[in-house]
Length: 289
Image (tube, rainbow, N blue to C red; front, side, top):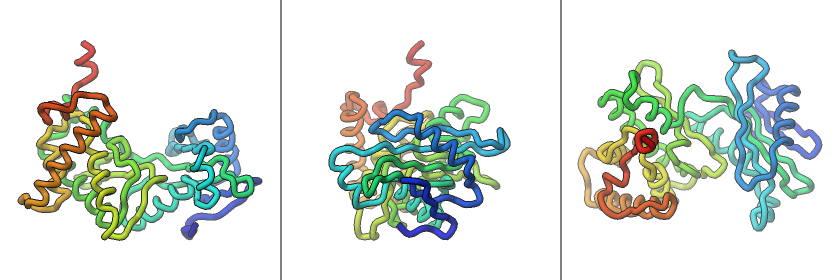
């Protein structure tokens, strides 16, 4: 894969590393290696939080470990880059296109011959919160979002996702927990896009169905403080038009239908009846009481 000029390629035994030289050290590599060796094999990637030697003053690091693939994926990985390499590549491309992403400190893959054994990505902590937590911490709290702030955040996010798609990117898993939110200096909001091992960039004429899939991923779950009107406000900002066209109304109806389907398939809930009720958030503490 093409290596961005900021990254240096290193080899250590069967490991091939691409590292950000100013943030990398032998001590850090020993800690990363130790943590990788401690994790049991799992078909799902595992993320571990590392506290750097600098203590509390230094930002935390997050180590995402990809275990050996199985079946047809193991065969495919003989001829393609690892998920870690793809993560780094797309992070660099997204950053170059003006999107906020975590800084990748290093990405590495371990191969025996051409057979992929393990891979990892090491990223720097970003000063933000996952969208669901950001919202939860501001429901009935002193820091609660005012109506105007919530409207600004939703419209800003709608425009940001549309800009992502207009740039040709389709996120691999655009669920709310993969969008981190921070208040920007001078007002407004900043959105960090996370987890890019499955993100791809397509020509503008390609990938319409995948972009729609991103919208369904983002819309599927009830979220603290988010109403049906808020969802429509996001969609209107994504479309970029003050008034609905026939095509946009048709897309909105499709959007609702697919969201109902996914809620039934993934969350095993009754998706019939009121869409407003289906998408309303219920505080777990209130339900438990």
